[in-house]
Length: 87
Image (cartoon, rainbow, N blue to C red; front, side, top):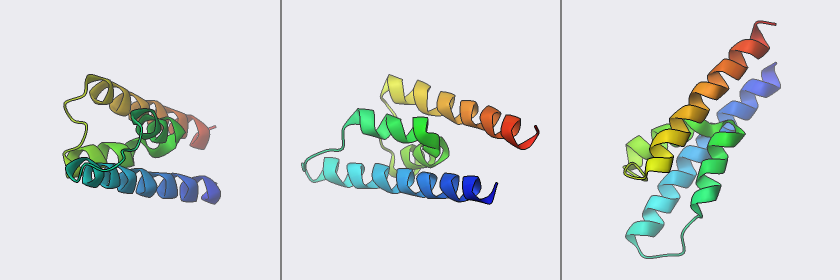
């Protein structure tokens, strides 16, 4: 079970950082990280880091798909973790 927690910690830290990197790139008119990649971090278990990244960096907070999908994947992962740890 420890490896699972390490995975979630790593993917969430990376997701948070990637949102910050994309925000930096947006401000400086640089090549951007595709939105699908940002969403993929939530799918892969980094929804909390993505959500914190959105809030902390004020990034993608006006995009409807991010306002819906990131919290949705967060709730989904909470349910999955509860199911895994209690059975």
